[in-house]
Image (cartoon, rainbow, N blue to C red; front, side, top):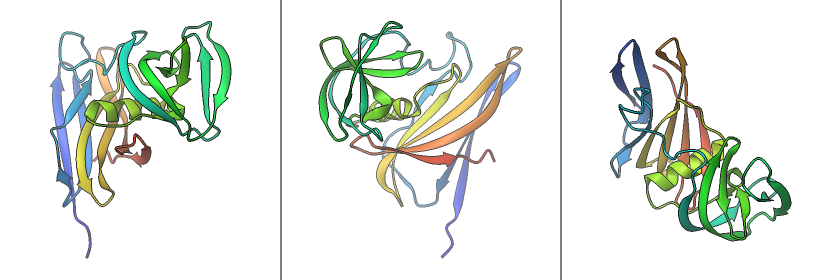
Length: 201
């Protein structure tokens, strides 16, 4: 039996710009929780949702990180431009996390003693849309100034997981220009899988 697909299109009208946020969902997908929208859909701090988290700001976040980088995970002493590499943590090892922060080169988890774990080489457990988005953004490594995200908890042919759609825009001469979109599946243990580009149409 052939699978049918439903294309859901969200259009947000913005002065001098159209923000186009497509998603392609297989028919039969069950939506298990409300959608989370994060980003500058209207590209203004005064209108629409803002970024998931502000850069260079510390957020308390008690959890446990599991190292899943290809060669382990880098740990640094300090968390600024003067940070110093300390060591590589082994794959599969687990570390208490106290908080996290976003720097210009990506996300870092505070593992105590002013030691910082490179977040794109680790995963943290997921209990809601925000945890899923944190894992996805850490996996991506860096975020654009005008990225938008849609996060849904679903049950589909891949099981129960979060779908994170990343919609990338340029911003030229006062207008938002849609450039590309990608989909990520995020599971309860924090594992992220890139599912490739989302069709624009």
